Image (cartoon, rainbow, N blue to C red; front, side):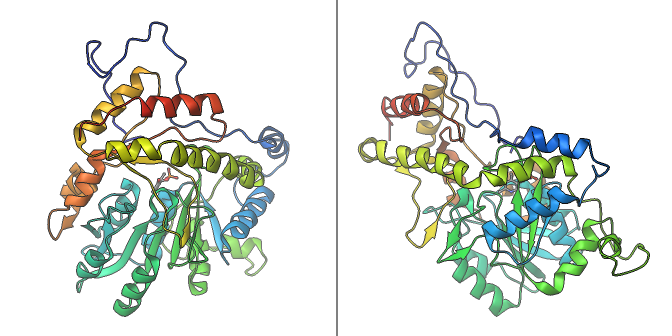
Length: 403
Ligand SMILES: *Cc1c(COP(=O)(O)O)cnc(C)c1O
């Protein structure tokens, strides 16, 4: 999420919201990649073997774990979530002039994957309650050129999937679930990433489980799996060849090299082994924020991230929705002055330079704009100590919102 997390400016020393602290405190970083127990050992195993390229034993093992966590029937590890999204665009045969409806408040890769085929992202607004797509606008934006719907489960809290799936069904459209935040999350008992035609996962080092850079595509339409393997293997049927299903492999289709190296898979497998532990640590932090910040939030007219009862979130992030944009800027500065890194999040894609060039909207998207300009995310990573957690809580509750 690097390119749109614009660094926040250090506040001026005479800013009234910045207390003078004397000795600079040790920083509380926003995110830190998890270190898993077996990753170094696994890397050694790969390096000492004759199989360092993709689709070896660790890929098989990590893929099985991803399937077990999500309940997906078919999954393929990829070099990134961005590439999983690109694979979805190829598999859906998106062509120049086709349209895909997508919320403006999401990560740029989901839109870039549409544009990579010459198709047009049609940006719609979000629902303030959870930052996910506004389903009314999603339905309204469907037109004769629409070829797919693309949604994200923001912060690992499910979008309104029953509505989305019924809209998609009625229009005969596939759904792409960008589940980069939502590994292990659920919606009305169903696993995130398994309800649409495709679900895409990220194992970037800012995500709950990582291997530096990596991803996966959950292929939920069994009829798509054979072609998905080909697209991932440079357009060749090498996967079938390796399984002995064909006696030579050849170039069959569009594609690229979307498969993960065994080195990355070795780290990923080790991380996935500790998935429950990572999630427990993250939920402890999330729950502490929710419990400790409630009174302050009520007094200050701040809205804390909340999760509807019919879905389980993944503790990927915890955000505060401030009353005003000024409150956002000042809280970020207030925390920064105490060595706490608490950034905002997506800049609306419809107003970004590429969004303006390649995409369109039906109308202005005021909720996206406002949500984006009031949101502050707090440090959340497996390994954040209770002492650091307390510092963040104290830092936040010592701030008075202006709104
Ligand atoms: C991180 C992220 C991506 C991109 O993931 P990569 O694995 O870095 O390509 C896509 N969508 C969302 C919502 C993300 O948070």
